[in-house]
Length: 380
Image 1 (cartoon, rainbow, N blue to C red):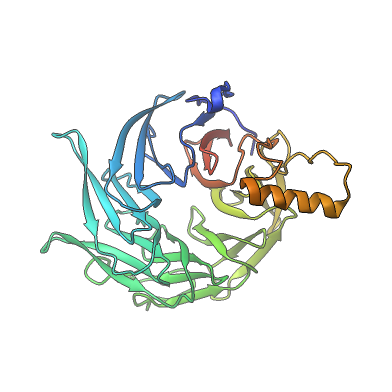
Image 2 (cartoon, rainbow, N blue to C red):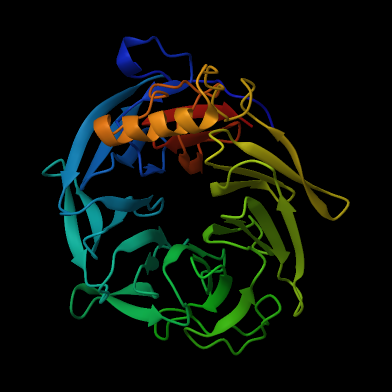
């Protein structure tokens, strides 16, 4: 694991010249996804649009704006095999976007998710024959294409007690892991009859009988909302980050999972990325990526990867008035002007607000994006 840098560029924020590897692409970035060849980046700038940027290895230029959703877009995934975009939004819909080379444009196809709350998180399966969308309706919609009717059909995975914030596919495309605001990470079967072949060998520690929608494992390790859960590259372990500032890892190869939990003194994480089977990078409200390693079977926090210091804001200058009067003045200021005196505080980190997304760029670099509108390249 290493610090920041490496390839980047882009618009400067507020007229300031940005360091290499730092680009300011929007006022606010909710999520991002790379094209299969890593020459384009799709992102949601916090509204109902999807912005696509060309990336030449050093700088970003805006290429296209996709408009079909009518509420903020919350998740984007770019399928590597068939070059299709998958988006979902607060408008309760998902779209599959196919590139029309004749028109030189993206063509959207509506997916009926059958949900009555926001669609939060969308991911293609690895073979891209299915995708899953998590939602505020306490369900995950698993969708597959029906050639006969020329549309995407959805089946529901239930058994969550609250909003499902993320869903990720196991490398075998038979299982999904979910992260929910009911403080749980779960593993479900997403085996669809007619689309998937029935397993002949036991799947991890769960056997061969895994009917669709069955909850195979429930992990109650986080003492707070679980923001994201992610399979390791081999699919033998699942890691998830909780709002109690924790990273939890479970080895699920055996019937009884081997679990590990690491808490840190800082702010909670929102997202994570497996670098390899024994290395995880997590990021979130701390405004810096944080490196975790497994050594001798135990996971531990190694270091914050932003060499410019932690995410805590610089201390406000001491005022002469008493603590009570100071607190009163602060709240009075917020009431009158909708702000307090610390507006414009600069953090010591490259990111100036919560990191909302982290992705792999290549074997040497990964990328973070955040509420501050920055896209930052980091060396592994």
